[in-house]
Length: 316
Ligand code: KG4
Ligand code: ZN
Image 1: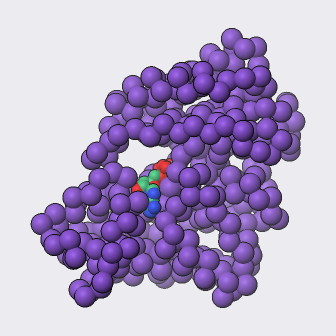
Image 2: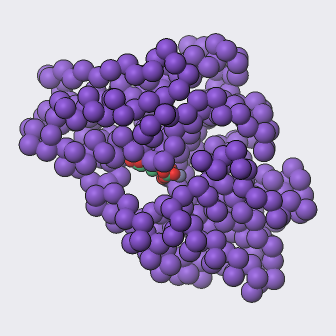
């Protein structure tokens, strides 16, 4: 079973082929959005890139899997129309995949550990903690009431003059910190199940701006990133005390952050839990994660599932 995965929910055009549990091809075309994603521009860039990338690798495909939400309307429309047209012309089936399932099922597809697992999905659009009992059996137990973690990284980065995507830029700055100056951040929502990041964002941007010195920016990025890592790690611990789920998964673009990975891994070790996350290059949006969900669904349900809709409970 050779599956083509097409991801175009936001700004990255991801085209990949998987077969027998292996990644055969993986192309990600990154768009340039200096100050944050411009939806109209993103859709046009997908429109150009998607054809060229697919043409390069299209070869004996059995199934086309494409993202059909959640995401930017124009970007999704380009990807899904292209995928359906391609499947029709090649006389093969196509399957609509939920972008979020792509993020949090990818580590399971890659490393095949035991269900259930507790999954933290941290991206530019979402912050969700999900109990995953099986493919297509999920319970969202916590979410952000306001901004997503990645969005906060992006907005704070922009405020201090860094480029988009901000999370990766902040991580680079943090490496140069000497921590001569101390910054203070609120411990938002520690006593509640949900996440909230808008208060943290406001507190952060009050303490620094574009004109601050480089040394100050380095220290700030380091402490800001550590603080977010701490908040995420504590939320894992809180839910673990309740559900005793020992396999922890971290996914989404922010999971590329090494400090956040290390903090959660250390907490997991302390509680004798296991952590799983995709390799760094598969944390941000890509076609492999979309193809991998199609593969899991096929394995579980078989060809009759090919017209299933993305899980409506995740369409948020
Ligand atoms: O999953 P993703 O590619 O797109 C969405 O589904 O939203 O995530 C993009 C987000 C951006 O907010 C970006 O700043 C963040 O992932 N990100 C990072 C890092 N690399 C990307 N955040 C923290 N540290 C990183 N190294
Ligand atoms: Zn994503």
